[in-house]
Length: 116
Image 1: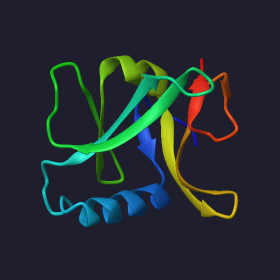
Image 2: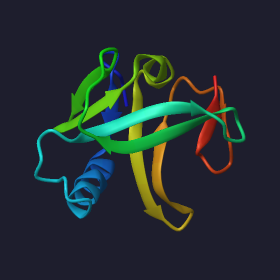
Image 3: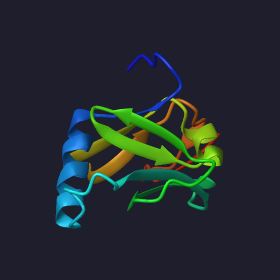
């Protein structure tokens, strides 16, 4: 992936999974809901990723859209997530969302935490 601007991106596979999860949560048809991504302290490498559905944009939030998916993050998290792509794997080596983060200097074996 070559980043053309400072944004947050989503792969086709992750987009499909997000759409299905939003439908399962009963918010798939509500245009006010979006995917909120963030970074929180913790995990074996120091920082962990956080994903959730939300319908409230806060004052300092950064709002992006990729492949028709609205992605929102707080300003502090965006500093760690700039040009990151959200991916989804359903392979034998693990199932779930993961972040392809060019800003991470290292990540843990489980892929759920990272350091810069």
